[in-house]
Amino acid sequence: MENLKHKAVIFSAPSGAGKTTIVHHLLKTFEALEFSISACSRPRRHNERKGKDYHFLSIDDFKAKIANDEFVEWEEVYKDNFYGTLKSEVERIWSEGKTVIFDVDVVGGLNLKKYFGDNALAIFVKPPSINHLEKRLRTRETETEASIARRIGKAEQELKTAHNFDYVLLNDNLEVAFAEAEEVVNTFLEQ
Image (tube, rainbow, N blue to C red; front, side, top):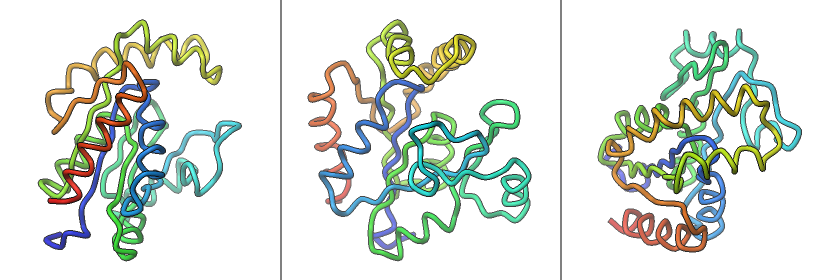
């Protein structure tokens, strides 16, 4: 972990805050970054690709990997809905001499920061408001009313943890957020 190539950049946010859009922008901007593909046990959405957006695992497979200590971090986000970071994924990226970038929920982000310590930059993407967040979730057209309500309730709790991150990035204007994210990440990569 002492080697500079073993750095990690962590983006976390409530669902719908725009972290994935910002991470995709940074991946186009910085050749040194490589996306860490998370594992999950939830069903694949229509626009998601296996091995590209997530490593989709059955609940039993996910639990077997937990038992075998194959995760850097994992959590049961909702009942039987697991997400985690495979150690093999991080090792693959580092072996290529790249810096790993994560797009994870808030609990996952805090767990990753704890695991990687000073070798990680943890950024919390903050939406302008809960109402704005709800509008973004509705625009996706991938969520049911129940899942929107659950995500909004969770977001209200997650916003209270922003101070635990290294940096809070307000995503009110996407172009401004892109520029700010570029500056913060570039400073970290040059350290």
